[in-house]
Amino acid sequence: MQKTIIISKKTGRLGNRLQLYAHWLAFALEKEVRIFNPAFAEYSVLFRGTTDQRWGKFPSDKNAIPPSVASREWIYWLNRSAYKLAKPLAISKSSGIRVAKAQSSKFIQTDSLWNEFFNESWNILFTQGLHFYSPEEWFLRHGDTIRSFLTPLSGCQEKATQFVTQMRAHTDVLVGVHLRQTDYQEFVGGRFFYSLDQYLMKMLEIRELYHPRGCTFLICSDVSWEGGLKQDLRCFSGPGTVIGDLMVLSKCDLILGPPSTFSGWAAWYGKVPIHFLENPTISLALDSFQILPFPNGAFREEYASLG
Image 1 (tube, rainbow, N blue to C red):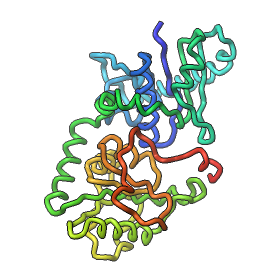
Image 2: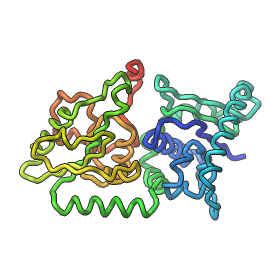
Image 3: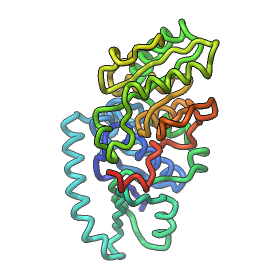
Image 4: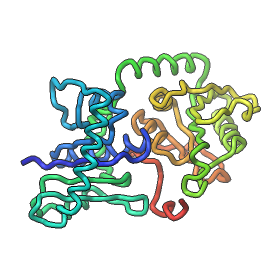
């Protein structure tokens, strides 16, 4: 019987769920297991590999009939009940069922998990939580396959390409800025909440780094920023939709923002250098922006105690 991993709980929003999905997809490709991800339910209609898969299944079932939104949600709650039943069954090694839970204070490497269960007889592993990570070398081997599976549908791609093409016609360097404030006032105790002035100072630094080349800033934000950035910078708002902002960020020349799985996914997916703003008092340099080896939001275990 083929081993099956079930991502059993919705964890955060789109960025979190894409990151988690990607790390388990790397696991599935490396270990030749299958994935069920009913927790991707409301986003699955947006992506090539999941739009017609009832359980967020990988490898995909060919010729599958796309399920309705209601049935995706029904399947998710059925899966939640299955997880609760699995927990007591997992105590017995003869049940063939295992459960693994990764909280913000408990990071789990999927290769270590595999080694832990390697000599045991198991068929189904229910997982819960965001912080499961697969090794970098797995992404070197399978990254493009994961990108292809989690590519937005062609309509989303075309709109993003048109949007960015218009921006590029009038600039040398297109800088994506993930200006995130609303939920970051409380996230990990406000550790990564920055004022508009702090974002502005970083943008001015970037412009100076590229001078005399011209920079345009494409700002994807959850707040109104137009009145707060009063310098002579060329700034434009992103599309304003979750998938639109994600895609235009992935097509920029570089990305600036606080630690976030949203901008982290855009950077990894588009192979765009990113700088996660963790200490705004440190000046930027061109080598501050790095290509991510795998999707992450720069969240570390030591941050858990701040929230």
